[in-house]
Image (cartoon, rainbow, N blue to C red; front, side):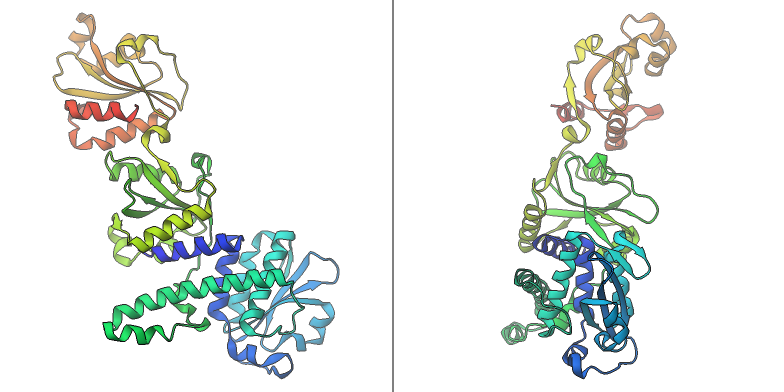
Length: 442
């Protein structure tokens, strides 16, 4: 599993205090940056062939917030027509100018109004200036762009150091795995510079962090989109990445896989535009084919997870158990007639036993527990016809749990004890398992 990709992006995005799509674009910018074009300078620039060229953004003369983007094989500042159309805000020497320009469009897709134009708000304009300052810092030249405020330049310089640190860490980890111990010190003297950002894996999918305590309110993903959830076990030693249409599905799957060891820690919830592409980036081919396992995390990775969770989210990680996830409250089974009728999705999940059934139980969901006794058709499900008609108390309640989301909780319990399932929906439960169910609502 490629934990480092998610950790790096989350931390850098928070440090930059900017949107995730722009961070992904800057990743691509640093990989595509062409030093040979940058060193040519505004006066010595010559026309290039192939994919190499310059990506540019121009502030249109018709309005302060209207910008146009494009790419050229030769330095755009030498084009008199472009110079006359407005002021250059951003110029990037790139190995693949057309591809990088497409990435720039994706970063500002919501503000696009026509093919070459963007209508940017104040925050987006500041982000664009940070990108421009970043290019100036890397190139050591303004490349024909106007001078950027020093405060923005400092933000860009800090951001570049973080990217370089991430690339260096991944690069050195790979080198150490290939070198003998006595050669490690020698390798550390030649840490990578900007061109070594290729050590960070390719990311061709967009995502945004949507971790929130009200994760149930998130819309269900449609089409190619989906959610990536990073969940750790209750002792924070093992973790797993889940891919689903909604975080609730991932959380409930984690509950089942981790048995009754709760709570679990929700480290990140990411909404991605292409769930299959995300899985290809974060999982190996065997993991995608056979499924992922809960894997050990190194102390370094644990520290990075804690740091990213602390910095990325105001409330830190979410710690979730069945009680908070389904809104559970254990009720006294002897007083089943006294409880109020509930409307869906709320309800009562009951573990009930019919007479002459031995250790066989049913896990039932109902709006009111007494309905199981008074409704002859439901009672018939729990007993044979003779017992239902002749026995004064044909049903015994062992556990009653009030739930905000009753259907889902009932399905969880039925799946949790699927190995105890017998004929016609009956479960052969022992005293220990009855106590486990009751404990979930306490």
